[in-house]
Image (cartoon, one colour):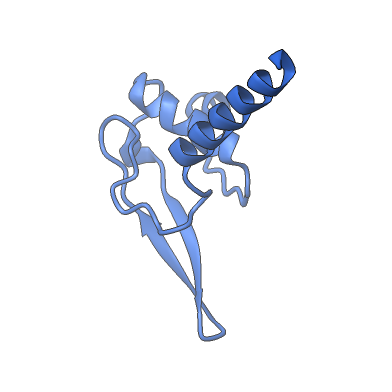
Length: 95
């Protein structure tokens, strides 16, 4: 997407629920493959049956400054829980 947008000078509008796609875009911003000013990200917030697009604020390193609560869960908590579960499973296999 980045190559097409830059080399063909086109605007791409993409709707996705892919955390992988978002993380790769953040990485490319950090790597300076694309300027954060050339990217617009939005989160669809639904409150009381009303949807509202909330612009996500990116810094120079691809970090989202106004990360919505519960957006893609919490990576650190998930990794810690997975590690604990793996350790418990390994302990059970040794017994």
